[in-house]
Image (tube, rainbow, N blue to C red; front, side, top):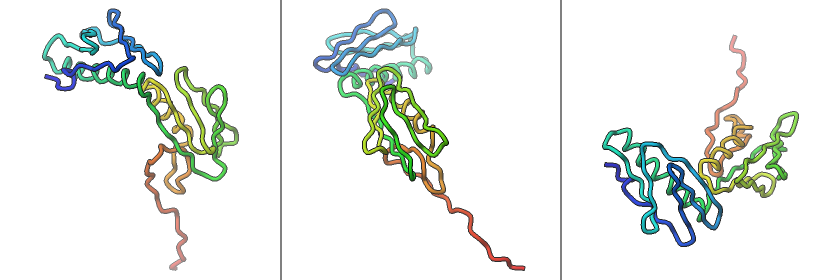
Length: 182
């Protein structure tokens, strides 16, 4: 039996969950988030907890059970604390500027790259080189961070590019000049 899926998800003070068919909506101080669960699973709100149940002991249902419970737990955490990812920009002349639509990146191309943030995600820039991506949806925050990093991933020779805060980039030795031995 799934040990993760069995555990009920507690709803903290000020957080409400509403189930309508296969759709669950969680509201809290940071916002609101909805998700449709798999048709085989059932979900219920009991005594200020959310309980996920599965129909059988098949491996497929066990996997879905744990996944769904974790997704609901992430929804609850998102509306209470929120999620954040941090990115660093490294390179001479590389910078980010906050814009009303998201962020504009100057990262060594002949043109600045505009990134339009999806609804529900806030991008803030500190010191022109540190980006902070915040939101209530863990999946969406991670996707936005990955898309921004993909604009200019860190390269292995000089380490220039956009990286996650604390990410270690493995460096390579460049070409070395050899004396002619003939």
